[in-house]
Figure 1: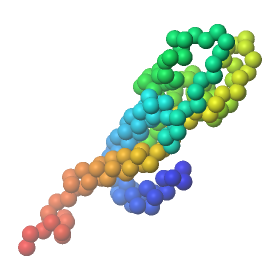
Figure 2 (figure 1 turned 180 degrees about the vertical axis):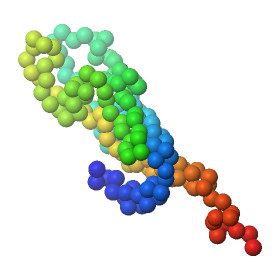
Figure 3 (figure 1 turned 180 degrees about the horizontal axis):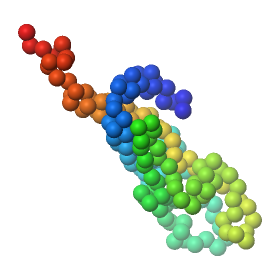
Figure 4 (figure 1 turned 45 degrees about the vertical axis):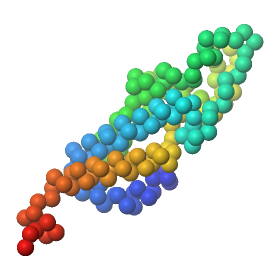
Length: 165
């Protein structure tokens, strides 16, 4: 997670000052925004870095209906792509039995399309990851959340900058 180091240095102190409940609500908000971004990547048939997915291989007996449909259209639904958050982390992950298929496509591994067929090498099609746009969305969500809670805790009697003299 080296791409998140700038967030750690700039925002770690501010996030640490939040209560566990507000950290959890922040993590839930961040994970929901991330899930929406990941769903858009999959819908556009692009890796998080913006490169298009490798096209499907053509078969001798091609089923045209399957080939016309976008890849991973069901995977981007909330049934399979879950967003979770607690006071320590924000997580976007695939759940259930689709995890195995997602790993094969994400990393470009070998798998059997059907139980009685031979193993096939799949092209790597990254499904989850961060783009620069995702990082700016995360940063904006964190800053918005922190400023919202900072406004609640700021009181003129406690904050010397807000006192009227």
